Length: 92
Image (tube, rainbow, N blue to C red; front, side):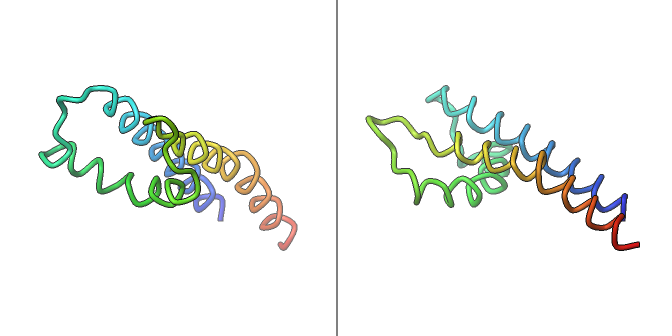
């Protein structure tokens, strides 16, 4: 079970890095997100970001949904994974 927790933590870390890259690339208007490798990055990150875009609409042309997306990932990584790990160890 410790392998499962470590795998989830690694996935959250990698996905956070991908989100950071995606957000930073939006600052460059010349990047075509319909060409590779940017299309693959958009396919991986946009479904998660779209969840938060439906909650927080863009304000003044600025998309603040990644802030909430990062916050949720941090909560999962910092709170849920240790709680799950404690639950697993107390069950044995």
